[in-house]
Length: 338
Image (tube, rainbow, N blue to C red; front, side, top):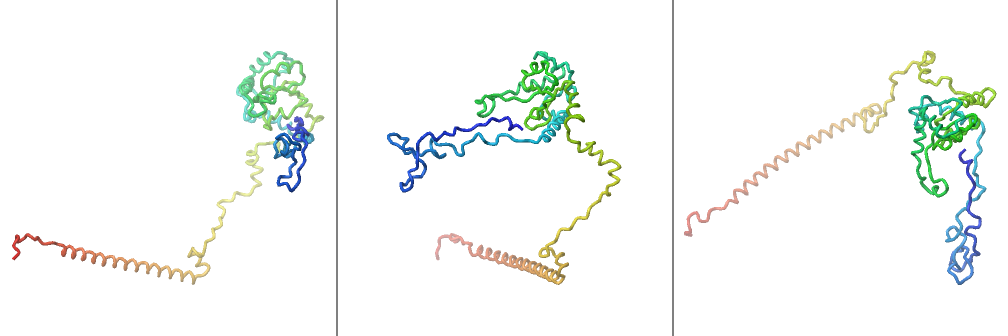
């Protein structure tokens, strides 16, 4: 629905086409892009028209006959408005949308019909402060900031949060009183706007109703008025429905500890699985395993014996070399050589 407010825009159909240019054709070792004719200037001979050329047009120039708007079924729009109205009466959705309604006595907030005759903004602020709705207005005022992006230079410089939506039946001055409050919007009950009831597609707008407006809903959506979607459930308490005696008596008893399928064993790795498939192969594998264990034990004992023999041999070598390496004392008998 938000697309239906857009205005058409497009680049000029002559943008990038304001020169006389033609291709030089083939055989001149240059690209076949159109080139500016003439001479005596640096512009002559330069490429033109193409989106890859300096001073050329953009690729796929935008046109005003683009599909700007979207058709929506009337029944679908009525369904959405009814859903948004219902969501505005749920405090959890209103608070989740960011509205400050901690001091509001009830949701939806319904005021006396005399509020439609308010003509001064000061009186409007006093009314909102009395019912605890002024905090939401202050929140919207404090959130005003400069827009990020190029929109700040396109007459939409500031952005701010949404405040309360004032819904009335007869405009006896209420629009003049509330329209200058930041974040506050006004709407007639006969022209309920989905873009105001659910800004940005988020339902749960904080609505302030006049008594006459809330009573008018019975006429708008009554037996002679617009048809609203039938509720899928008359009682939305699922836990109570499921745990009721009527439903529980018709259910099958709870299955306790369902039998789990055993995981398939790999016979090439699991000896028990192999026994089920081929007992002879399992016996052969067991025998081979025992033989391998026996060989491993024999190999270990042989290695231990060799290690002990090598240790004794090493010890004998060490003793022999120690004995033959002992040098006698040359001067034991003096220097007499005879």
